[in-house]
Amino acid sequence: MGMFDTVNVPCPTCQTVAGFQSKSGDCLLMEYTLEEAPSDVLTDVNRHGPVTCEKCGTRYSVKLTVTTVVVVWTSEDEDDT
Image (cartoon, rainbow, N blue to C red; front, side, top):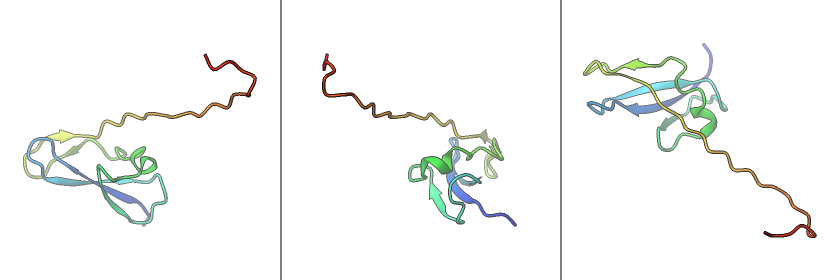
């Protein structure tokens, strides 16, 4: 059996929690809430999605929007404008 991490995601209809498995990141059998999951784990969170809620039957997945911050080096003699 392979290693993975689990991200617990509540159903948008009834709030029943489903475990989404991720094979990205360190894969140390860690368990996270959606809010606390590291970004590297979230990149693969939909690998078995969408899922169907066991309680109400709603099909859902996680929509991931990534924001990248880039630091750019400038020399001292460049203008600050």
